[in-house]
Length: 373
Image (cartoon, rainbow, N blue to C red):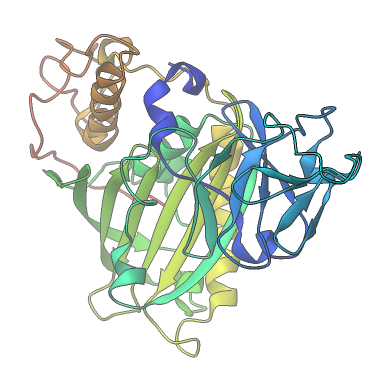
């Protein structure tokens, strides 16, 4: 299924720009689901997402200016309030009213985790899912990147959840193709989705921790959590051997084949024992390895689990497909495919699931491997 065919995704919150860029004094172009918008911030009050073009003669509003609390069109100087109402038409003679059709549609914008988030559907919450490490623990928060990738938003989120790809995709950083098996783990349901706790024995991550020794191995636990259809949380805990950290990952669908991949980090350590510059340098190398592969994936994301082959180590991404299938069914996009009978079997050292997919969450799996990113 492609993102533009998935009406339920429009009800989610998507990051569009960094907060400081929106408040820099000029309107910005934004894109969601193949449609263009204008993102701007009045001198007082919250940022606003509005239609892309002026209703007068179709000029792009992002090419205009911001004067106080008004967005001014570059073509004829028409001025728009944050509500979308046109408040001034310079060409009107004194005393004449502004035409009632001179207004633009607007959508809500919230500022959270250093980013501006918008929803162009019917939001079921007041913003993106909360992030425990930033909201409650007060860890150091840093927007790592907000950049376009030539990949489906669903593929990006699926990769965030995928536990078995690092051995091969990340062989240039911390992956090891000679250790492809995935450790025993279980999945538990949460109020917004589900999470998995995966024990890991990982090498090569020293630079991400402020340790220049890339050869040192660490025992850690990776918590992989789906916070919402396009929101993930990955927490890495080292049991005191190193400072913990957490990734908040999201994907904004620009269109079926392009996304803004958004990642924010929260670091538990101080700048002295966990320098962000070292952390980011290593993290960047890892994410670029993901980018190479994801930009070669099919933008058509199958919700019918019988269309793909699944192994025991795929429980996390298999459950993601079920969650999306239920959302699509509730939106009337497709029949409920979340309980499809079986997936194709595949001979492998990691044995396929008997009959395809597990009937429910929480089944364990055997093996051990290098971890996810």
